[in-house]
Image (cartoon, rainbow, N blue to C red):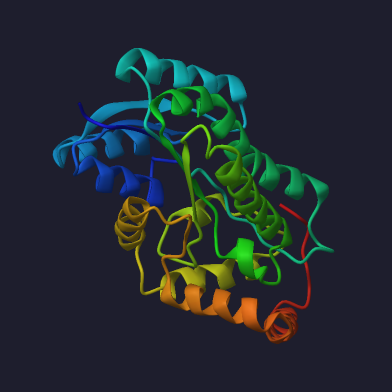
Amino acid sequence: MPMRMMITGAGSGLGREIALRWGREGWQLALCDLNEAGLQETLVQVRAVGGDGFAQYCDVRDYSQLVALAQRCEQQFGGIDVLVNNAGVASGGFFAELSLEDWDWQLSINLMGVVKGCKAFLPLLERSHGRIINIASMAALMQGPGMSNYNVAKAGVVALSESLLVELRDAQVGVHVVCPSFFQTALLDSFRGPTPTMKAQVAKLLESSPISAADIADYMYAEVARGAFMILPHEQGRAAWQLKQRQPQALYDEMATMATRMRARSPVAGPAE
């Protein structure tokens, strides 16, 4: 029987590449996103590589839509084996410039969207002794300057994943959390922040990344098969995380210097979008 996976944010970027990587193994995939055209394109590509499934519009902020998606997985697939909470949005700006609305928007999608996904699908995963794969970010571990709301949301995803790892062991539900660094992605399409300069700086980092979303999906596939909990696809990210564990103050000092440089390049903050 083909294995069954549900992926949020599957209309582009990493979500699409995860679908294609598992699709090549013949999996049945439930794909969801706000981008319906992108979703249909992902489904076409999945079928071309040997997978199958269905695509459904879903806003991860709306728990009832996630519950409906879980019900469709139950009806169409007879359950689910792997849940991938991938949907996310980018944002940036120094703390003093970010509005509370910026915080609410970021947390509602990048953190609470993951919480709601886990909540909606857990009954199916307990039955199948399945797995949860939560997509966080190196921002969860490194807390770079000028992105505090994104850092907090992604750190919450890591803390949630750690909590589920220990709570769900007796239920035989596996948990993984993926922390990519910057990579080539469509994430900036959703970017919100108080200054255009910040978006330009993030865009430069994304463009300069030597690793693609497809590379990350390949790395994830191997690490999930190995049973790794924390999956750090970037070699530089793994090195930075080791440094922080050994010498946290050195890393904080470097981040503070980076913040000073960023402020020098962006001296005037415009109104929040």
